[in-house]
Length: 182
Image (cartoon, helix red, strand yellow):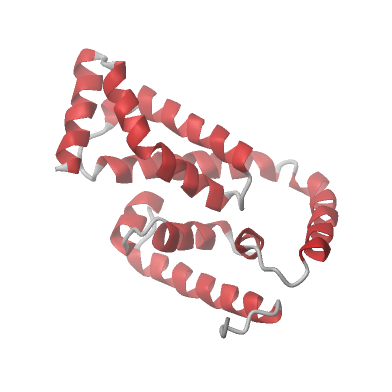
């Protein structure tokens, strides 16, 4: 029923330019999309909000290209995924300049945290594709096929990213005092 409702709302936006119908889609998906960005940005709420806003603007301006080949949520997550990677690509140009400042901040944060583990800190050490796959699988509770549709990766590659990401997280957490018995 939910998928039918999404398609009905999309049709109202495309055919009648009904902005209230799009508002309903935003209200439905705003929290999951913001949470998705929050996990990908390792807790940067301001950046997450900006990226979510960009994703919804792109969704609205391109809604007529939605062909119902996948669910609306998959299409929207795909846009969000692309918005995040556009942001990452734009940041790579200045990454070398900012890397030293970020390292100093991270060292200070780690000293202040002490024994308490922060999930965002552990996610920072993963590659973007691993973090994306883990976030979609464990935090957004999406299946491997849906993640493949969002990322454009083959299902086998998604599974590989999940396995490698889990292994890296396990090693990182063990090295930082988490023994699994808590």
